[in-house]
Amino acid sequence: MTRHVAVAATGPVAVDAGLTAVRAGGNAVDAAIAAMCVAMTTEPGVVSPMGGGFVTIWPAGEEPETIDGNVAMPGRGLPEDRFGQGLRQFDLAYGGGITIFGGWGSAGIPGALSALQLAHDRHGSGAWAQAIEPAETAAREGFRLGSAAASYLALTTDNLFGWDRETTATLTRADGTHLQAGDKIRDTALADSWARIGEHGAGDLYTGEIGRRLADACAANGGLITAEDLAAYEPIVRQPLRMSLGDWDIATNPPPSIGGPMLAVMLSELVRRGRIEWADIIEVQQAVLTYRSTVHDYSPDLEEDGYLMLETVREAGLKGLSTSQSTAHVSAVDSDGLACAITASSGYSSGATVPGTGLLLNNCLGEPELNRLGLHALTPGTRLASNMAPSVGRSARGDVLAIGSPGADRITTALMQVLARHCLTGLPLGEAIAVPRVHVRVVKDEPTRIEFERDPAVAEAVANFGLPGHEHEPQAMFFGGVGGAARSATGVLYAAGDPRREAATGVA
Image 1 (tube, rainbow, N blue to C red):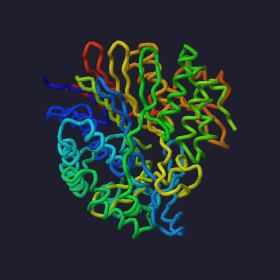
Image 2: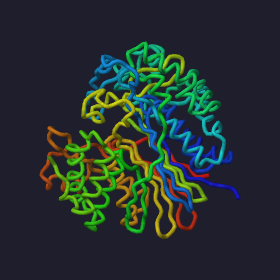
Image 3: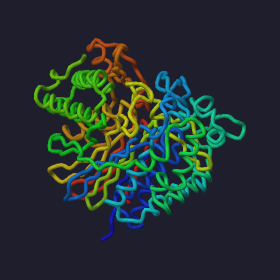
Image 4: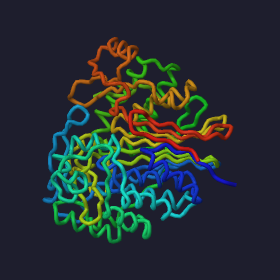
């Protein structure tokens, strides 16, 4: 029997990679891996193979699981005086203005590729090399830069991506100006790295040639990643959080991730209220995200505090909660009912490329949002905080869904609004994704404000709520890029992408 698949990904090249993987004998997991690896190639500056990621999978007739390949704190075997070094401060205009840290010292131990490899080994049906090949081809033959990546590079070429010679050579035009949407990029070094990963597996990044180059480059340039860090890193299979959403059973990223627990609590509160009005969405977001800003952002044990929050809400509701960009997502569902959701992030990027590999490092140690306890404050080996929440679900009728979003702290609020409307009210997936969005911005010691897309009903709700509001253009990239793939109870495959990002979908 021929297998078919629905894919939602970052662009047409990524979608085509996913469909091709299934034609070659793969399933939804192979499709999602192929599409994500292409996204890691064709979205330079936005996502990279050298970041972190999570894979949530639900095979038909089995239990779901989440594979944690998140970035971890490096520095095993280093003297104390190395910590706090190798960081470069950058003030970016992105998202209304942010301050981040790049440089070699901002890179955490990358885990995304290890998670993809383990997902393939446990659930894939095609060859690993076939899933990797489209990414190699895209890098070697060249790809056209999309508008989302181009808009980010326009803000960062002269600073974040302007200090490392190899990075600058790849991410600028010949005259040194920033790349524009539609420009063609070829990266032979990255293609060679993908070829090596396809032949030797993701393990090459940890105990092989790529890992050696990475550790050597960090040692020479003030980075913290050591050969000992890479050899010790392992992806972790976790039991996902489960929640009932109408007649849907949703599985999402569990603690120590922050994203999944926050999403679960927000959705459970909407279920308890039995309505999805703008005032409810804003009130629930404010309560949950205020709790996050005072507890989870400063937690020394994200796993313990994550489960404690879930138990507190079960017992006492929201009143029990004390109030003392860069990601990419791929969803795939196949005709066998296998669902796979992958979210990966490299932060805002460190700006550093591992010499001779084309591999651009993450800056997850340099994101203040993920390091409220302080830069380089964690014990080596500790998983960093994460907003990522790739989710899968099944309805009592027999529908299957894989869904997720990029968007930093807007991931959970975007998924909250889309899942609530689709699963609780039956709004078609594409329509649920297109509805205007709000996001309550809560940062400790800063004024809380409501970010919202221009819409009369939303503007009225914001005005009535009494918090300052900041209006964005309709369907603004700021609010994430939800992508979902699904199979209906009658066996029809379909996918929906977000107009806020340069999303693409395909069914084959």
